[in-house]
Length: 610
Image 1 (cartoon, rainbow, N blue to C red):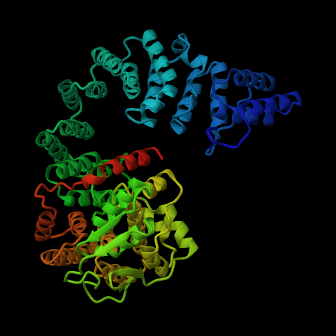
Image 2 (cartoon, rainbow, N blue to C red):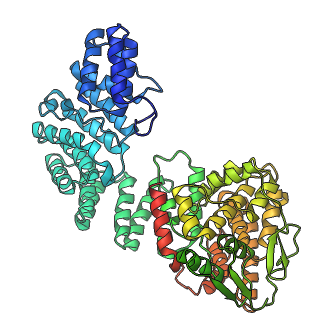
Image 3 (cartoon, rainbow, N blue to C red):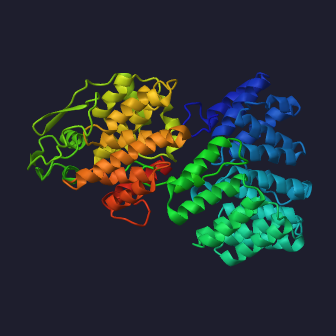
């Protein structure tokens, strides 16, 4: 349903003019439709409410002019709310306004005089008011972003007025505290929640007080309140998870896990505890097995009590778990130097060894005329596949590389431009998103690997094209390989075309395509437990080969393949140790490459606010 921000519909003033014309002709249905459309665009406009009152008077306050139903129009819902309030049924009106706010939280649906009138709470049952505030809290983030808080402030005024009328109502005080906390009024939230607990101690009241204390930075008080909540109801395991999360946020992982183990001892399938347990164990030791187990739990329990973000939180910003790993090397250093110089000087680069073909092609396309000199081609020859393959994507003339395949179709080009992205919540989410490529032909998916289209004219595309075109190329290659996972899914894995092609790509010429294909195989292992031993074996063999080659010459993709190994389900301990050795790291913590931190900050802002 349109919210009126960028809709090409008539303006509110034009809709109201049409409503008045319809009124003059006695056409109440069309008058009501135009009023509802105007509400979507200007919900607090005084002229709108005057016209709505005229429609109500002419129809005898006929609520059915603004019908409710399974697909009710939000303008009709809000208009009906105002009519209910005018008819002496404000509680029902507030229910509908709260529903509209849940649908479109950024619109000022409640910024009208009757909602904020000091006398309104005298006409409302305080428990009904509390339930309405709780309904609002369930529909908005905690906390609400600062820029989105103003539409909720009329409800906060309602809460203040209600507490003035009912100062000792514990449920109302707690629900009002929850709303105050969400809109940044933390001190007020603590005050109200404290009063609620004093008026009537309860589990819910202590939970609200604990959350208020936590938002105020009073961790000890928060833990004490949540502990009292457990005392009220030892079987509410969600509170155990809240205590564990609070402890973990302050680096007290062992205590946090003790609380989670207590919860799991009571119910080993309780979703909040399971999600929190796997997240905390991953934070403790960095073992991706915890995240894989969490992904398995999510897949096997699709009807959890509510949404959880633990898996996405753990994967966010981590190489290959939540984002493409940016490439490095002298060619890309030269590319970034040339882009920074904006053509002011001719850039030349002398390579001690040949770099991946995708890197050579990307830089050549982005910086025409770049002077490149390759000192030597070291052994083992990087121009040769690491194993015999029928899937040759590159051919060399000396040190000059070119694709062996023709251009992809226009449909494939457009589809990948719409879908390719440098980040995803977690590997199973990337797999699900790639289903949009399922109808592309195999030949097109392979052609996209060596003929990536230009970045789209979006904010994200412009940043990538202007600051690091290589990252866009890697995005295309990653998503094309994810698309391969959806090719002929009726074939059993071991004999499937998708497995055969991806494995051949993994063992082809050392290239960014190697990384993309390996990530696709690893993603398959995340979503399909039966293929994990096979994928783990491929990863182990490929990483061992990289380590062997690295003893003879530099391998530009070695670090990225090490990160991929650390993201692989069921990989053996020796491969994990080898991955850490290749990374020069024994901490077990995936690291984002430092030189591109500024670019990732810009990309992160775009991903949050496209």
